[in-house]
Length: 70
Image (cartoon, rainbow, N blue to C red; front, side):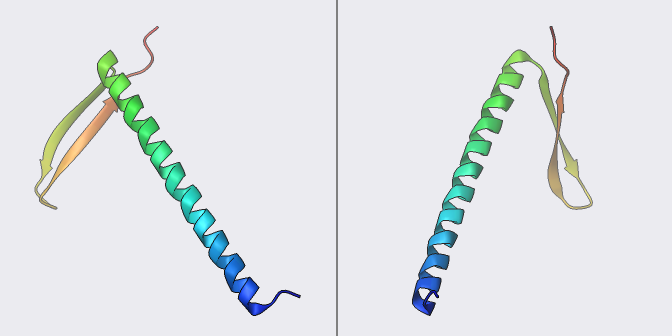
């Protein structure tokens, strides 16, 4: 049987570990997405248009990616 203190310690360790993995995965995903966008833009396959939405009073970015060019 596990004591209450060990149970709390175990949960804190698991929460910390989960937070670390989640944070690291988010950073990797952001870096990969950013590099993909830069590469697509450099190749001329990524185009975007900035418009203004009067209903919500915000700027809206419409991003289009063309297909593979062989």
